[in-house]
Length: 366
Image (tube, rainbow, N blue to C red):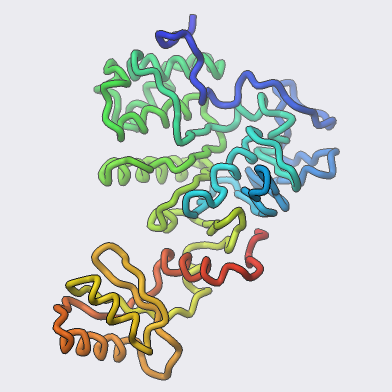
């Protein structure tokens, strides 16, 4: 008998198991409902994806007058770590729900692991692990019991060796008898990941997995994701943190339901010819006001204790301008610790791209 929480409910995030399919695809399949690697649907609305784990074309979803996902196209290749990066409300979670079949698109199409996610959600649940922002664990069950529960939900036979393997990899083995309610935030997130992986999915989908996690646990979580990818797992994730995008092989910059760019982090940096200067000075408010009034400075943004300046196009080198700005700040009575030329970060690029964003997005097809 499957272990249950005190209220006897199945957790909300039990994968996609138990949801009735809304439709069907008519091509022949194996007895387990899976499509072969060279599967091509008889439905022309479903794109073929012989090598990719996700293939979306002109995907669209609205909620009333709000276009949460506004015609995006992308592929996630086998073994790739693909990140969707954007602020709150950009459409990241809605995109994942469309990929998983938890929402039906209002336009366009998507194939996930060679399946129609809306019409074959039950079959898809065997192939996908989904760690949502509010993954449900039972606080009155131990680490061992939570993993056992999700193994039973997914119908995994002989799951104990897999559980032991996950506990060792996630460094949870010595805490296996501890109740979930008594775990730290980082340990709860690792337990949720173990529950997501217990049925050995081929695609792992993560919705802002490190939000609210302390920096040490966040670093450890990314170490684990890197190992999973090296072992061949395909990972699709969303995050509001631009520094995490550096760890992905390709990223999509998303804002207001649209993909502004889809490229590798290196390629994104190469797309922007921004001339950047970083200034560290005190007091910061007076520094920012002084810099924004300078004719050389197009934009100035706060990045923690640093100020990032986008320079206007001139023949002068950014390093020369940086030194002139530092001299001017000191003459104005501002204490300057550093002023130097820097390459644009992904956050600089994203902010600049959003400000240009009324134009047609590039790189949306990949």
